[in-house]
Length: 184
Image (tube, rainbow, N blue to C red; front, side, top):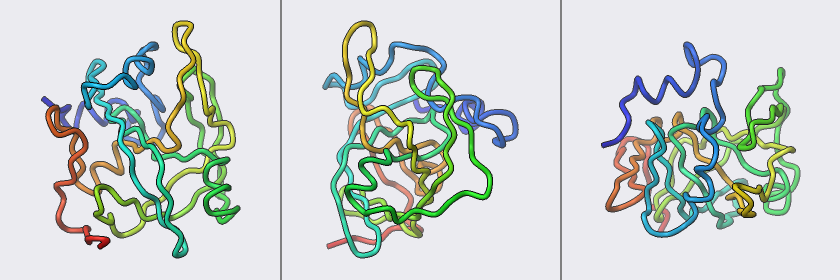
């Protein structure tokens, strides 16, 4: 059973204005979430799934690994990956956004970009705003084990916007029909 909208909002903070967490408040989930199978991991009321997706910006398209996380307030991308893939083609936020990293540290995001996310060959339109994080760790240590983080974390707001569900049998599933185009 997937979390309700109210459960999802609880992880975004009061009124959705200030994120309560960038990831689940409980530690230790990450090491398990990267061990296949299952495609879906449940931690409390948060649900997560890892999937290979494509990002498109200014005519250039790249493949990357994404963690779809209902406990995440924002969709974020590693700056190093973004810069290698698209150059420094981001915009500055007028006011930085404060986030919590997986290890509980606070960081500020001061950059964003509008990218098209492609899941299973389906372009999610209009393009999504993603935060570009300077302090996004490419690898973390969880319970003594080093774990590589995905290049992108797709947050609950993005999943709601495009009708993305995390199905226990099928993994990441795009069901919203209003904003979709096949990228064949």
